[in-house]
Image (cartoon, rainbow, N blue to C red; front, side, top):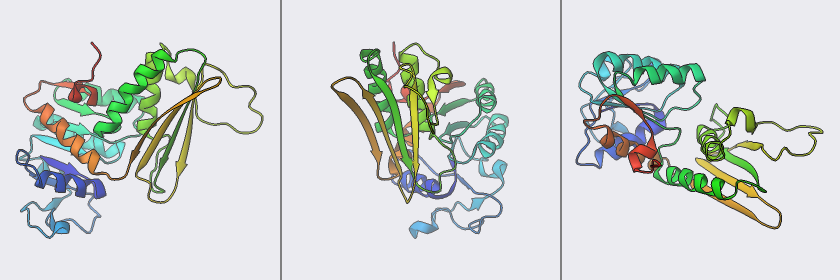
Length: 263
């Protein structure tokens, strides 16, 4: 398999090295990276025999699956090559526009893709809990989603927070686009009871914290997931890779991978 990008790439390489059933066949980075040409596992003090490459086609030459945690434009460029070569993909990139998501869905007609805004097993179990909670607390409770990430994150709200909103809205029979409130400032008036609010915090080295608040009269329920290491994303990504083994073309998510899809 081939993997792409930075700190997450390091986590993936370390996780792959610790398995018996996955093998690193390529590693990709941007052309300007000083790591180009170095052994992909050099940071571990280990020689993998796989040099870091900026040529996507060369990096995917011997791969069955690409794991991609980059930026939307980069992911779409990589996916185009995957489609040409018949390489499956695990996409953990966030920040896609609706049009870009449609491009990914089109590619999934030819190759198998697992796409999720968060590959953590715990986060995806949390999403299932939120679906259950939203149905049970469908009236009389105000819903707010609060997320916190490191200072370098470029998109807000996080893809995970948006996915939480989508899951909750779906469980309530609503459209998130019509319910989401992303900004409050000044005199906002009384809260719309059908709103799903979002708040984003950026600072320091926070890996990723997400809390969904169901606030009623006399009680509130908080469902929280906190990440202390990106290793959880790497382990979830490898579960997605295993799921794709022998899988036909199609667009899947982590609910499919973990068997959490509603009947």
